[in-house]
Amino acid sequence: MHKSNWDNLRYVLAVAEHGSISAAARDLGVNHATVLRRVAAFEDLHGGAVFEKSATGYRVLPDRARVIDAAREVENAVMSVERLMHGSVAPLRGVVRVSSTDSMCQKLLPHLIAQIQSESSELQVNLLSANNHVDFSRMQADISVRPTLALPDDMSGETAANLAFRAYRAADGPKTWLSLTGPLARSAPAVWMASHLNSADITTGADSFMVLREMAQLGMGIAILPVFIGESSAGLERQSVGMSDISVPIWVGTHLDLRDVPRIRVVRDRILGYLAQRARFLDGTDVA
Image (tube, rainbow, N blue to C red):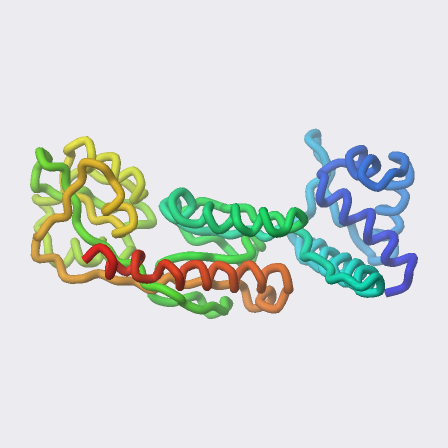
């Protein structure tokens, strides 16, 4: 890339990272007007706006998100050349957004994120907690970590562990079942409930395994939970209710267009290794 192009792109990236012209100017050690001029030059050269200005700052336009991803990779490459010339290896930089279920975001993945952050202060991994599937075509996340039977056609991924589910109840709780609602209504445990239980035996419920655990602990009924949640929850007892083993692969996937981005590939591989190390705990083998 021509030097002037990279220089302008550097200013665009700083605004994207900080969300404002003034913060980008401070980071780059220049004045406010210089940042505005450089961003405008980039937009004029490439025929379109990158940002939408609002009362809260500058937001990257949805259809320009991949421009910012590409800019980060250019920055990584430039810095890699500089460091290699000085005899060292360039660290990965930028943000990686990992989408997963609320139970995994609360109980499993933060331990890995802490390890990654301690090893690379320039690589920021953000967890997005949502039980519904994120729209990767709109660049809402970079990596998905979810128990599911298969990935969408536009995603590439691998599995390193299975997630087992079992039934749990408080000692004094009723023998009715807590329902799975919202996104969980399409889960493997919900499919089992629909085909094996009478509707009269199913009561109130929730769209979150973490909430279902709380309800079960309060003595509201039997909850089907991931074993890594149920076995570590005080006051809950595993139930022998004739439920067949329910096990779903945990997929670690990325959009096809993002699978070879270095920082995303590294974080994806770390997640796969982390899940593999805990496979016996996740699939219930160690708590059988």
